[in-house]
Length: 148
Image (tube, rainbow, N blue to C red; front, side, top):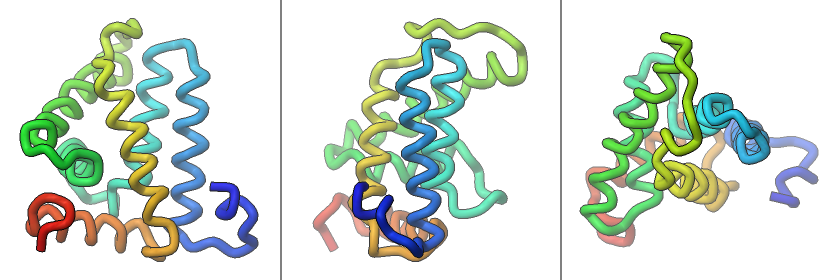
């Protein structure tokens, strides 16, 4: 991360990664659960959505699962977790309902952090977020990490 911050010229993927890390960092300092949730989801969307025409929950859930879990059962649980978290976000964003910290599944915080780390591990490999998301999608059809 330090080397990325020191770079004078960054790729679109690197800029987006820094922006997502910033959002995630702000989320960790935020006390209001609803704001924390919106910031964390924004950080992940910035990295795991290749364009504005994609199904958000499905692609974020699938890509996050591929990048953060090897075990099949855990991998399959991530998209469901993302749908649950988006339902909570929707309660706040679309229905002005408050959210308590314990309304957000704790596994989401781990998945979000692991998703940020997984993207950081790919610095230098991709020029754009679209390139990154395409590579993740290809991995989805190859199977668990390390298998071809």
